[in-house]
Image (cartoon, rainbow, N blue to C red; front, side, top):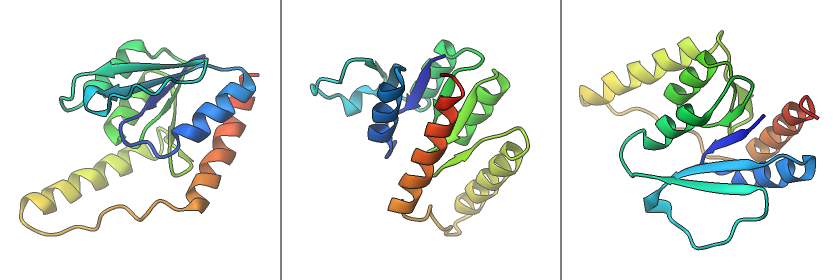
Length: 148
């Protein structure tokens, strides 16, 4: 089992790294070169850099991921592809993407994009809170405990 993180805008990388390391799992952060850092990662954490093009990180994660792996992303498209490949896919706000909820999430994303395209303003995501962080931590610990 491998843990992949769509890391460009992931606000819970620190939680993923800490909890995964505590449980003895490695983590692969996939991020664009525009987020390049010389900061050394702890042992068990690998960073893979990809081009800054749209969806480059998504494509790399899907190339590497296998059935049973964990993917953390806020991207509904990547989540849909991960589910189809048999991965367990988590959102940083502390919910699991499922075959039951992904269609509704993709439909909502599509309708919002069409509204924006027609000139209407849509609401953005709610601010990320400490409660969201704790909800994610609880879910992530529960998920990785299944693999121990």
